[in-house]
Length: 76
Image (cartoon, rainbow, N blue to C red; front, side):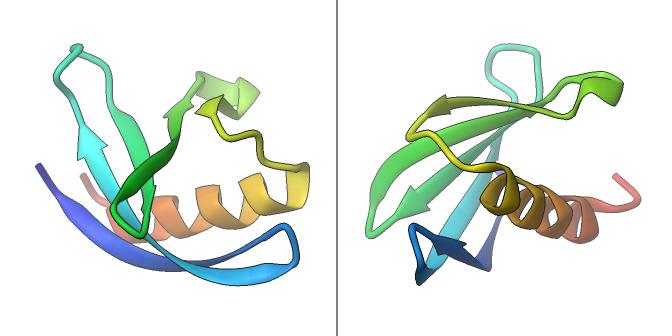
């Protein structure tokens, strides 16, 4: 599985997250891992944006994380 690190502000605190691309279900899901714990999973839902499972993210957090994922995975 592909993985990379990103910096994200969550609840007012800058966190280093490991993003792991999981395709085990046939869909591309990006798992967000903080300190070895899987905290959220993001799945791009076409033009509707991102679906989030796990720890809720506010719109700004989701936009920032989603944009970083897109930048890191551009060209896949």
